[in-house]
Image: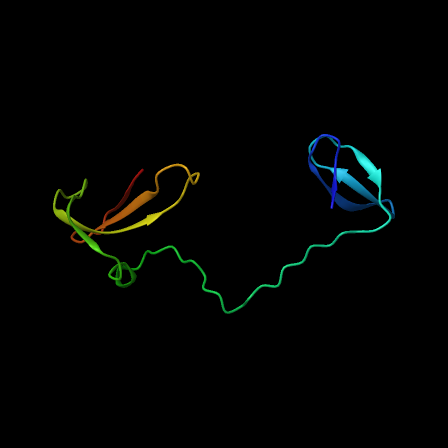
Amino acid sequence: MKFCKCGNLMLSENKNGKLVYVCRRCGNTEKSDSVSTITEKLDSKKEVVVVIDDEKEMKQYPIDKDVKCPECGKKGAYWFMRQTRAADEAPTIFYSCMHCKNKWREY
């Protein structure tokens, strides 16, 4: 790994058949005799995150019986939490009404 004078990590690139390090922040370039390669082996058995739209899939989540739906006004909704912003901020709670299937979120 090579760092630029500005402190940013420099990446190896092929420019006109020559290997050079390039800083993505300030544009500084330096000669490179070798290329650093970072590879990642992906496990094809890992689960894929799916956005839930199907009501059958929603039934796996807990029910908050005290939450009132803003659409129909009835109480009861399936809910789950996701960290959608920075880690130092509160997670977002997603709701789906048990009665009218309306979906909303609270930050």
